[in-house]
Length: 318
Length: 318
Image (cartoon, rainbow over all chains, first blue to last red; front, side, top):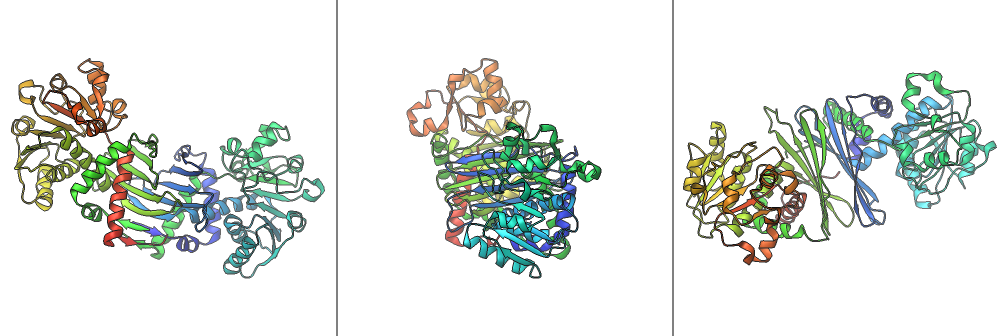
């Protein structure tokens, strides 16, 4: 059995392979050979254990994610992922689950960038500079030929961490910390939000937002929101990564309840991948990602295959 | 994070510590500080992934068990168990889940032997000499001062494996292969069944069965049975290890449907541990074990603590 650490997960496969793999995974969501049961929640007072299995024709994976919001010395979200052989059930590898989550979520967001944003985009904006914003910014530099990344986070520590992370992973890209969200949006063609906010982090100003591509990867619970009314007024369609998004994200529940959009305007991004003429005429676009266990399965498969090819990771006998 | 292999799990703690730990775990099932949600089944054609979380006040564990009945080169049942720190969610160790299962199931059976059988018993019988029967026979030698173990299995390969296993783990104990189940029972005071049979493996002969202690650890599904009507006619009480047994085991469902016993005659073994005078007057006794995630949690805790004390297992950074 292989032990695949965060460092190995980060470096085993090139960023464009991650994005390609997630593009395939998005389409596999509608393939009967793949099954992703509803995730299991185990509550422990204020803490939660999430258990996310996903089954494919050749492999299956189970991700265990612990969410401990009041952790001080350790990250609030930690995890482990086990990848098993679908022919025998044997455990093939144990992965750092937090790193798999960070990489696959960023790569799914980049599939949105690939299909929704202007291919000539040079300016990316990041609102929320935590682990998830960092990984998204890095992978996005492999999807668009970026000139500069504008970003905002209220935490000074996160600002410093974001700059260090980008210096390590994309040293050729200029990164510009901003004073607020509005400054990020003013300067960016693609705007990514990666926060745990309960109220929109994008100002509700139509003129500011017109023509931009929005990628929202926060708001994975009904009481969380990142995107304001104006965005919904400017778009044809909300593109989503998983049907669960309609039940889980405040950025879909709230706009439908308030009739900013009709349920028929919510479409799966895989539809667009297969039929690019579905894009519509409006130049303001929105991709809402909540994640799905199938992305973990494809991510683990990619890293495992590369680790086997390149002989990466500890081999242990269980 | 520690990697704890089957070999380490087998040797880290003395057998009597396993049995003591399971005696505590049985009683913790009624303690509000412990929570064991219903296990999750993920079906993959003829194969199954079982996900069994269990939460305690200081630690939580998740066991993943793959059941692939048509495996040839590999065992049908394989597994992985992750133990996490309850204060931070951090993954502390990855265990061989099949070995944890084999050891804890055997140790729970031995708690039944401890509380139900004559302390002077010298002759143990095993019907079903697979992995589970082997581990049970071994641990039982640490609970009773056995003179000889009689056993039966229709597979010659299993007979050989049983003898090799016992030669390795309990070389001072005589083991006697039998021609059939009846020969095992005739010679034994304590009779343990560890099969996947759909029909009783114990002959339905009251005179043969009178006064013996029966420990049934197969029959974990409604269509599985090991114990015949006569046993139920001879006992006061069916002692169980988990309330789930009433829903899961054909050895409880079938006898209740056929009115061989009343539901009020089914009692949890922890009751007997706390109140030994509950035992009743009849000398024929039955313990039916189906298992529970809480036993995995206590087993993992025991092995982890011993591995830390004795510096066993690989340490890997995830």
